[in-house]
Image 1 (tube, helix red, strand yellow):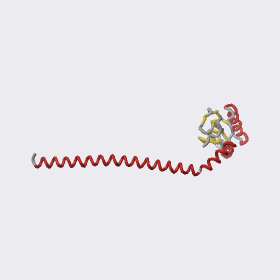
Image 2 (spheres, helix red, strand yellow):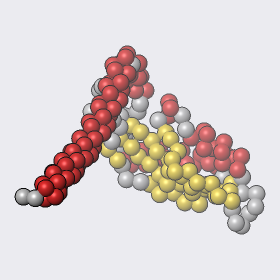
Image 3 (spheres, helix red, strand yellow):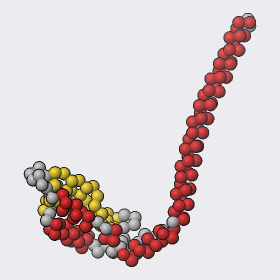
Image 4 (cartoon, one colour):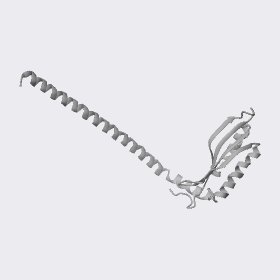
Length: 177
């Protein structure tokens, strides 16, 4: 082998060595980043668990409060009638109900949920007062997917659409912690 061939072979070996080290370094870096992310996620989970353990007494009080105060699911028909009465309370605020559709009962892990889609018309202040009266932690009701738009036919009115949801204890009672 000539001297120039030996030099080229040596350079080839050096280039292959450097390339292999570069590829290996990139793989190690990716693996390190993945492990760092996993470590960070585990640290966040550990902090979350420690916080829940520290707050255990508060959650136990909340569970006891739910067992005493959250109403038991009366059945689909009764729950639907109750929602209709609640929606009909809009008359007290001078609102007009444009539509209402009862939603299917949904069994959640910690409660039974019933709901109704409601569409109403009235002046903004009355609509907001009525919406406020519908919600309360002690009533186990909430308004979701709220949309308030100006009424195209009457400039002094708004059209309000929302979901009214109510939660009841499951047949097994309050979910335990």
